[in-house]
Image (tube, rainbow, N blue to C red; front, side, top):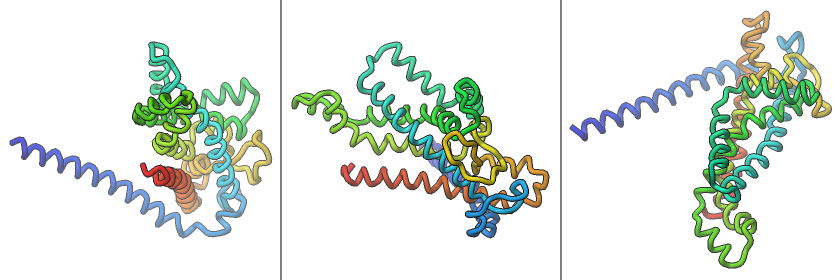
Length: 282
């Protein structure tokens, strides 16, 4: 009876997995089949025309890249530094546990809440206006909890003997962490960063309130400029455009470009992680 129950459970889990994979494959195939015919050099390199109904999406691509790069520059070092402090330097007490609980809670907060936070703090209170700077800082706040939690777990996974051996040889605590802990924890820390970066590249709500413009046929010249972004551009094309049926092919093509961009960013981070693991023979 026990073996039969195990087999049933395994098959239920297997069918659930196959079902999820099939749904994802169907969605991806639908986007590729309907979006690929509309992608050409003009679509990638031209400026939008007639409120986005015609032309290309170059400003949206550049704007998305600016937001992703800016978010990485702000969130990655801050998130990893926070994780290192909590895991290696902070006293383990009620205050530290409270910080960890707050970080874990923030990881589950809806993105629209971060958008409202960015609108109130960066756009209005700090006077940045709708700008790349406000958008990057808002997205950085949104993905920081994910980076902190995953980075701290990666640090805890490194055997304590590596730290103790280094300290026994006379190294300082920071030298021990920098040379014996971080190299082995870095692949795991990058895993959380990959998840955060992918989420930031595809979010609509935070950039809707802090940086994104639907029709802005020019490239940004400073971090205080407002920009177009692929997620918001796709959202408006699909839900707000007065000629929704006419721009349907552009919707799919924009979705495909966004998907390729997110996959490219994630693959770059994954390849970096693999390279580090091979160098360390992890």
